[in-house]
Image (cartoon, rainbow, N blue to C red; front, side):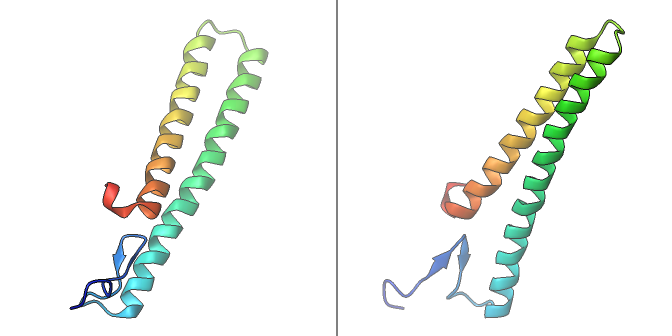
Length: 94
């Protein structure tokens, strides 16, 4: 095979033995996972807001631990989303 004919988009080798339909299915799955991770990131932001409202309403003595857990949850969600998007953009990185 000549050099330059090996096309790779979003980590999928379009000149391999798989069919075009399989390649586009894998690409759709990758984008779908990234989309749902973005939705989950929005959920993590909502959790932070809910914890803020809850800790301002109820004084139970462990507000700092609840806020910390909410921010750790958000940071982990953001990290996973960034890794997912980077794997779409730069497939050889992971």
